[in-house]
Structure formats: structure tokens, C-alpha cells
Amino acid sequence: MDSWDSKQIKILSLGGNSRLKNLLKEYTVPENSEPEFRYFIYLVDYYRRLLKSELNGTAPPTKPDIIEGLELLNYNTGNSDKSNNLLLLIYLAYNVYDSFYSCFRF
Image (cartoon, rainbow, N blue to C red; front, top):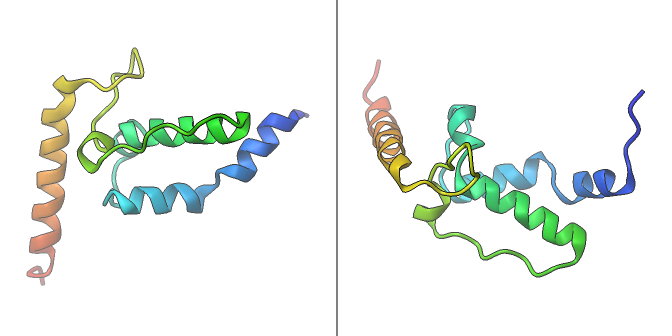
């Protein structure tokens, strides 16, 4: 059986599904968005760094604005990759379109 160290237990108590869900909701990330988008945006990287700072008792990272928060991360480096912004714009445009026209579907 796996055993958890005190840091792992503390990070779980600092985080949690509801805290992350509230942050995603604040940035208008739909709950039904694809995990490939939801978990690989800069906002979630910020959340991970925020939890780590709380765990270590260090200064929290700067909270991203709405545009920066929704940028996709470069999978290889973990940094924001501006070339992925086209994917973000397509994703957002689709969700706005889908949300708007969903009220007209029968």
C-alpha cells in the first residue's frame, strides 16, 4: 500500500476539487470543457504554483488576467506558448457560439 508523506497530505488539504472548480468558473472555463484544454492552460499552472507557495510558505505567484489565464501551455516546457493562442481563440469562439445558439435548439 502506498504511504503519503506530510507534504502530500497538506497539499491535498490546501487544494481540492471545489477550489479548482471555483477558479475555473471565475475564468469562464466551462465545466464540460475537454480535459486536454482545461488542465493545460496557464490558469491551472498558476493554481499548481499557488498551492506550492502555500505549502512552502512563500509569496504567491501573480494571478493571471483572463487572457493570460486561458492561454495553452507548451506541453514540453510548461511555459505559455503564444503559437497555441489560435487554438484558444477557436475554442472560445466555439463555446460562445454554442452557448448562444443552444437557447434556440428544440
